[in-house]
Image (cartoon, rainbow over all chains, first blue to last red; front, side, top):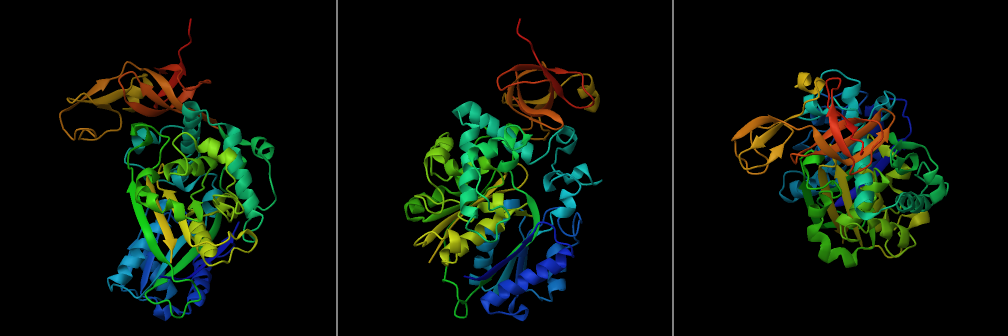
Length: 385
Length: 100
C-alpha cells in the first residue's frame, strides 16, 4: 500500500542532488508516519548526467542507501525511463507481499540542469561526454543528426498526421487543456492560460513540434513510500487493480509503424476497467505522446486521437479528465522522466487533495508511463481501493 | 562501414528467409535464422517520416529493398518523396529525386 509520497521540484536546484533527495525522502516518510529506520527497501531509477552531473554513480542503489542511512534487505533498480515509477510500485508491492521487505521507498528524479546546461538531453548525453554508449548500434545510429527524444517524437507526429490527417491545432488542444488544469495546481511551473494560437505561434523546435508542446526538464525528486500496513497513514488504502508492462526494444525504423507505443500491449488487460476509471494520467513528454496514449489505452480508435483532443473536454471539469494537474508539460519534467509526476497526481486525485483541480468522486485512476530510448517501454496501472 | 557511407553506399543484411534489415545482428529478427549475407542497397528509397530542426532534416527512409533506417537529408522533403543516397561525410545522407 502507498503510505506516503512527496515531491521537490525546482527549475534549478543550487545544491547537491543528494540534499534534494534527502529532503524529499523525509517529507514522504512524514506523510507515512515512518522514520528512515523503518525503511528496509529501496527501488530507484536514474538517467545519465542527472545525479550531480555524473554519468553513473557506482552501484547506484547501494550508494543511495548509504547516504540515506538505510540498511536495506531489498534493493532494486528499474531502468525504463518514464515508465519506471509504475514498474517500481508494482515491484515494491510484490516484494512486500512476499515478505522480502516491510517498507520500501521508490526514488524517481534527479537534477536535469547539469544536462540541460550542456544543451543536450539525457537521451543524447553522448553528444557531450566521451565513452558512453546509448544504443547497441551507436556506430550506425549516432552518426546521424538527431536530438532524441524530441526528433523521435517529431518523426512520430509527422507520420501520424500523414496517415490520419491529424492537425497541429489538434495537438495544440492538448497543451491548452492541460494548461487549464495546471492553472488550478499550485505546484505547476506554468499556470497562465494559453490558446491554440499561442501554441502554434511558439517557436518550432523539431517540426512539427513547437515549444509549448514539449516538457521542460527540471531538477526534482518524487519519493513514494510503500508498506505492508496502512494503519498509521492518512491516505486511502489503495491497491493496484491492474498492472501491465510491455517492452518494444526494436529501433523504431524496424517497427511495423511508428504511430503506436507499447501502451497498446501494457494496457490491454485494463480495458474492462476503463468504464470505471474517473481520471487518466497519461505520460506527457510531448503533446503527441498524450495523443498516442489516448489511442493506445483505448479512449479513441487508432488515428482518432486528434479528433478526441479537439472534441472531448478532458480538463478536470470535463467528461474524461486527463492530466488533471497539468502534467509534466506544466509541472516540468524532473531529470527527464515524468513517471513521478503522473503517479503523484493520481494519488492526489484519489485522496481528494486536488485543490483547484480536483475531479469529483475519484475512485479509480488509470496511469500510463512511457519511457526508455525511443519510447521502448510502457507501464499501465489502475489504482483504486 | 563509414567508408561505404562516404562513397554513398548503404550495406544491409539479407536473410535467406527473404527479410532484409539494416541494424547489424547475427540472427534475423524475423525468423531467428543465421543464414545471413551482407548486400549493398540500390540506394533508392522513400521518406517514411522526417523532421526539420536546428541541425537540418532528419528522417526515416524506407529503402527499395524493404528495410528502413535513420538518415540525414539534404534539402527539404515530405513523406512519400523519392530519395536517393549521396556520398556523405561518413554517414548516410539522402537527397530528393526530382520528378521530370
